[in-house]
Length: 226
Image 1 (cartoon, helix red, strand yellow):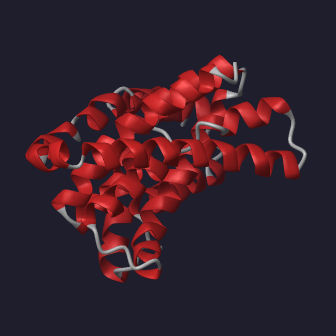
Image 2 (tube, one colour):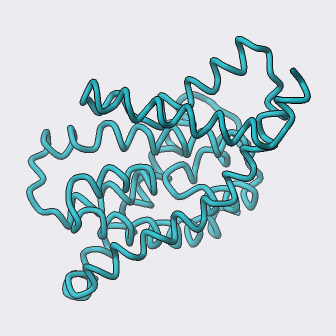
Image 3 (cartoon, rainbow, N blue to C red):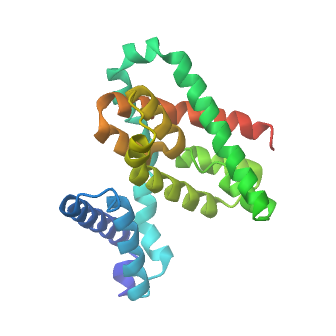
């Protein structure tokens, strides 16, 4: 059993299978709560726990999948390019919106951590929760945080954004697709952007550009905290 699970193919196959199950459940239930990525994560955890498979074994293949994270994020540039003229006309509100979004995210995390009396290491780990994983890891390391905690926070934030973004847009009556896209990208990075793309091409493109600007602003803000 250990020979099978320690193979890189095990982690890759398990991840793909779990995500495919998540997609089928999502299509069947047709609810944002049945997020394919969330379902896949829960299935992978269940398999590892039930069969007592070490996480290190799974990571033999999981690490290979992680290699595609940065290229997948960069691929969002295609949707941005398709809305280039719209981006040029609205560059100021987009930049200001993402800058404010990044600041609010970090300030809210800092304040809540202080209220709940978390130590400095956890605060540093949670501050970059709203940016894409590669940037979040670097910011967390720079501030002295714990990378595994940061990765978990980024994943939870992204899944929450993908699930609740459409609901929040309806509650606050956000009619402007540019505003909706910027808000989603600024608070829930690439995972939220997958949902923004479902809402429309404009929302997806604006969410994609918001990921990059929010990441840059977060790095800049982190310089004042290090």
